[in-house]
Figure 1 (cartoon, rainbow, N blue to C red):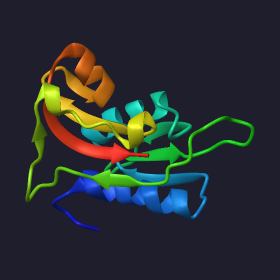
Figure 2 (cartoon, one colour):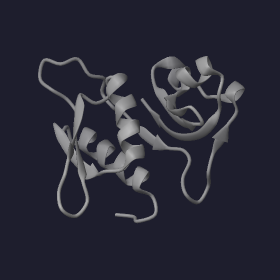
Figure 3 (cartoon, rainbow, N blue to C red):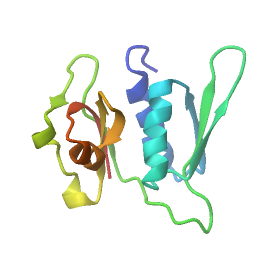
Amino acid sequence: MSLTDPIGDALTCIRNASRAQKERVDIKASNLIEEILKILRRERFVHDYRKIEDKKQSLIRVYLKKTGEQTRKISKIVRVSRPGLRRYTKKDAIPTVLSGLGICVLSTPAGILTGDDAKKRSVGGELICKVW
């Protein structure tokens, strides 16, 4: 695992677990990753998540699906902005993912938002990832 991009590592773990049809996956915890997971839960890409405290570093257990529960299948998670090349977007240029079937996650002055929420609030920011 890379030490310079924990968000990319977390998204890769979620993508790999989704492709392998796992029910859950454990990733390293951070406040930014937790905010991204809140959006993924609200948009029903993941079922739920729980923070697991331990002595070294906390983990977040992400539950991808639950039997009988309606969740959207994660086809792809693409990390757009990365430590070596930050990608920013203006409020007028926020991308639409697959004609509205997917979401993009932005880090804005108003917090971590989806592309639609950022358009409604009329703010731009760093384009973290796209999910569909």
